[in-house]
Length: 251
Ligand code: 13P
Image 1 (tube, rainbow, N blue to C red):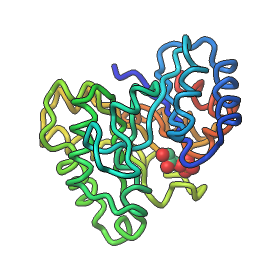
Image 2 (cartoon, rainbow, N blue to C red):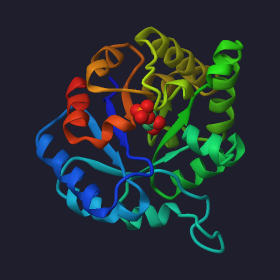
Image 3 (spheres, rainbow, N blue to C red):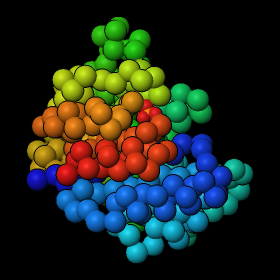
Image 4 (cartoon, protein in one colour):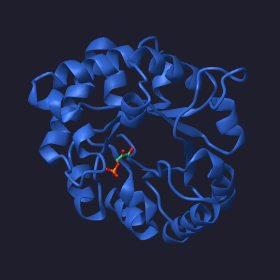
């Protein structure tokens, strides 16, 4: 059985006081839960404060991105070691906003993924098609390329620390959530790509989160799909009660 994983991607939101208040709110809402893994991904400047406030809780902390070097002349970048130093055990890699706004391609993301894993972080690796790709009939090819090129070179052991997040770009921040069937189809397709390019054991064990306009009122149905193993939540993760309700939907 795959343990569900619910993660909140706070994106570029919240200064320290608000971020700590949200973490404290989550702690209060989620003082006791089991059978589901919960992760929050604050902006890097507040990561350490959020990690401190969540110390002793079962809620894990994630970065939103990192570079594939430990240190050096990479102005503006962050290394996995720095994320860990600030209290993160996870990082997101390959979010569509990184791919689209910052031009990150599959080859770069593969380097980042391998380096983050080798550095001891767990990774939520994002994939997903645009509306144009879905409507143009290239969705399968896009997901296949993102998975095959993005996960290239990973060992069986690496996969124990990787979660794939399927986030259709057209559903992110739009309020247009994929139907449970659309999510299930894309997840089943992605799992099969992993099976064909790696092996059945890895594919069966791989958790695939859905992301894109997940809210408390649509989470249960999405999470009820056979191949949907969790959620990566944006907007609705900025509210403790709303996020906690999504976590409870996974129990
Ligand atoms: P929304 O939940 O705001 O649509 O964002 C999804 C997302 O991008 C999570 O990484």
